[in-house]
Image 1 (tube, rainbow, N blue to C red):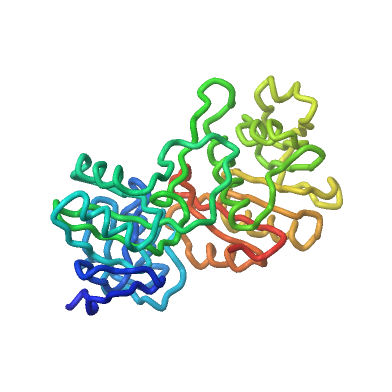
Image 2 (cartoon, rainbow, N blue to C red):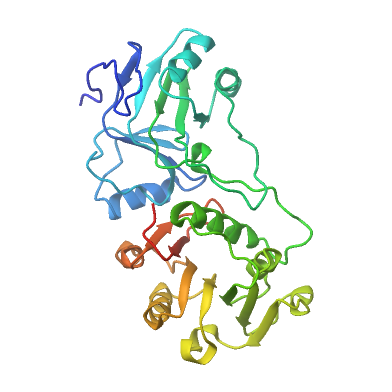
Length: 341
């Protein structure tokens, strides 16, 4: 099968392509670390695509015959090379010049030839590849991605599905104060929420309801933003949170509390281990009540992923399903007051 289209002097994004560039067919998907098996499984079950014959470059899966008319991107790909091409070059300077001729922002994904890739990146316009400090606002500028697959060839795409370098968000970790490492998930979720929905982070005088809050990693983030938290779980939170004046704790099964019993909230959060079907019923109860603006919930899978059920979450009004850098085989459902990007 011919994987290439004709050599072109222009890119679909109206940026220049050099004569050393060959436009490729299909898509290239960058799997989250240790998620290649789940990515292949998703491509088969959600997209009906057999990736057996695809080219593999570390965590990058190039699928030359993936249908280009499909607009959805896989959850388990941190970013998708939407218009992949191969760039041939003879020197580091030539490689960087070839990418710069197309657009400004380029981030690497590399699985080999690390030193050579680093030298190319040094000659490209600067982008911040360091860990971020929360809160962090994702820029809306385009982010290209490239991968050095041998000493003289790059596979890249100026148009990708994520504005983040390689599609991943890393935070500087606090190893002392949070009561659990789960705090990283809500930091990432809120950062993506602001990007997709244009909603500011929870703040002073806003009311949050966290279901299954123990030991309090998510509540810890919310009170540090100044928000009031109604935290519900059968077990208490960390002692420092139980004493926090912004926290109201109730020992209860959060999923049995009704909107009419506890009132309206600006934000509702859930990282509860439960069957996805039960979570779906619960979020629908709150949406139908009209007593919540924004929701962020982890969809925790029980066995194989039911993509039909995930689609039902994604099809709810003003909703988006994502896989977080800090998720494992979970997915995260976001709901806002308007349609997401």
